[in-house]
Image 1 (cartoon, rainbow, N blue to C red):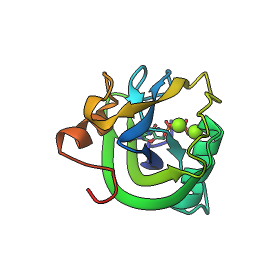
Image 2 (cartoon, rainbow, N blue to C red):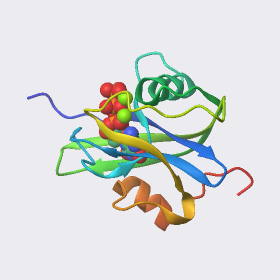
Image 3 (cartoon, rainbow, N blue to C red):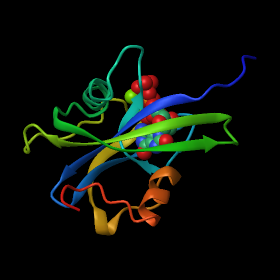
Length: 141
Ligand code: 8DG
Ligand code: MG
Ligand code: MG
């Protein structure tokens, strides 16, 4: 077996008013059945913004705009022998009326908007940790 290495995940807070888009994950290595933000692996040569737009299109069909870096976290999943440097960005819908589609149903149960003050449970732990630490993804926070 090859030695494990850290990978880069790009994770997107798509904000709509006081809501964010979350989906319940399906057995994809880490975070099975937990509510998580959309996003995925940074590919060779991509900018964070390009990766965010591509992953959001692949997973939800949504077109996003005004992609902006927010923060980075270092996430160790000891039990799964996985290590992610997670790059968090914020984005807005290009068309506020566009609806999310569940384009990768083997990886996600479906996407929906959740009020930041009333998030669903159980949250994927990296997101839960940010919430507990008081992180706020909204502009002019
Ligand atoms: P890909 O094959 O489409 O490139 O990747 P993916 O299947 O969409 O990857 P992912 O698991 O959704 O995201 C990559 C990793 O990023 C994930 O395994 C762990 C890390 N990650 C966090 N927090 C979050 C989060 O809130 N959402 C997502 N999607 N990934 C996160 O550390
Ligand atoms: Mg993906
Ligand atoms: Mg993903």
